[in-house]
Image (cartoon, rainbow, N blue to C red; front, side, top):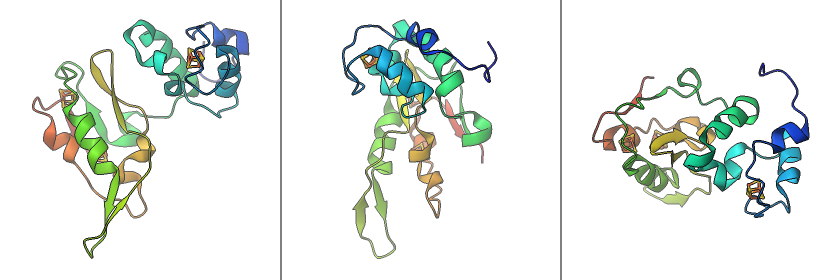
Length: 157
Ligand code: SF4
Ligand code: SF4
Ligand code: SF4
């Protein structure tokens, strides 16, 4: 199905876990399907979609409703062959993107969702807008790249 084809709620629902667990903030998976179509929510807002069991469903839903996390958009190149899913980059990113330091040395907390997550044993970008490189003005942080012991992350611009 081409990305531009409009999906119906029932079609979207078929890719969701169907447990109505409410972790996304909706009473049912069907309501979450409507929220995806209305672009109120993103696929990663359903935590179960970030597990190995739903990896192909997540890819499908991201193709329709996810952000553009391609290397062309982000400049962050992930080598899936080299990534072992250790999570070091996720931890260091969470720590650094959660604060902003001003020239005066004052550190201000920044309340934004995580940029990176481990999904199916590999790191993935799940919210690029949280990256310090997206701030105005941008901060040319590269601690995720520096932390990876396997050279699996590369900031190519
Ligand atoms: S978090 Fe996922 S599985 Fe739970 S109700 Fe929402 S869409 Fe369904
Ligand atoms: S560049 Fe910095 S803020 Fe952006 S993903 Fe890497 S560690 Fe996180
Ligand atoms: S990119 Fe590197 S640091 Fe991040 S999870 Fe993969 S191996 Fe670990």
